Image (cartoon, rainbow, N blue to C red):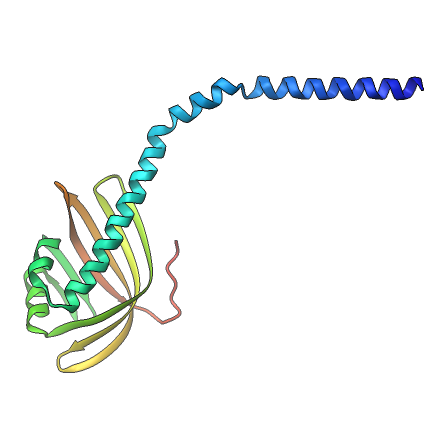
Length: 177
């Protein structure tokens, strides 16, 4: 009987010690302070999510504007020093707009299978789109698999496309997130 009382007493002491240790390791008032200290970091993460959503929408619109040959909207989106890298060559903004307007390359449909976005600070971002592009190129309808890299920079309140690069890939290609 004495052994049972001793064991009960020891267990009670261990439980009390554990409870006291928990309170001394993480005082409740410090938990609240920790959240307040990290609010800036949390707000930054929320801001990053907002930027990502904004860029995903902008990229989706860009594909539609290309399909619609809406060079007026694209001219606003493309930075004056932007570059475009295709399977057949690389060129600048004016030539890309001319190609789209003339129908030399008509981006009929970009079926987007996956998109990854990385935001760097508040004014730079890179999007990777895994697409199947159906296009009309020099008189022929073609379909190709690409990972398209889009580089954006925010100037004033507007995102500007700095670079659009088409990388030919297999249909099994995956974007690492």
